[in-house]
Image (cartoon, rainbow, N blue to C red):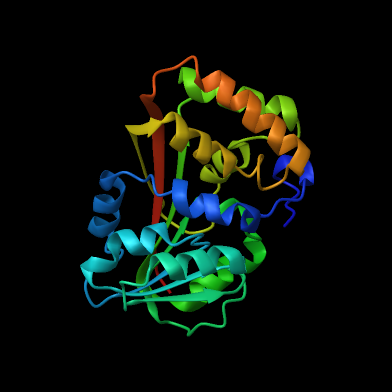
Length: 254
């Protein structure tokens, strides 16, 4: 995948990170899921579509609430992991396809979400696709979560990534996307949260970054792993990483 607005058009592929992604990216706080339910996302008997689902973290987290869930991703590796992790849920259907061309029914979904991914999509294609699929008065929600800029451990980790992969621009594209609204009457909310990690789980989280396993070559990944492990030895075995969660929701009227 390439995106001119992300990492100076550097190619990246989250499919390369899928096994690590499945193990280390289930880190969203309960407060996020509570807010999504309050918007009507994932509520009982509703039809919910999760675009760019990755390994299916959001669908699994809310599956017990009783929605009929379809989740899509362009990566076969990501969907393969999502299906494996979702074996205990019979109300989640996964599909490999681009978000811009799902082939799913029109006027069908009560809610559509895009978590950590909307800026990768092509606006001229994804916006009409969402409008086509969602019901009148349905809700579209885009979500972004990132570590806080003043977190010491996160700063040390991201500095290493930027040293080894100068084209990586972290969450710059996501922040810019938060300022753009393709639908009317945006409702913007944000909150802070401290997420617990160990040295191992934070190291794994960093490996799943677009700028590491998603785009580095094998030799550079080995350099990152060695140097990052040494950096983390300077910190406790368990620690909290400060994060900020951004949620923008839109009630779609047709």
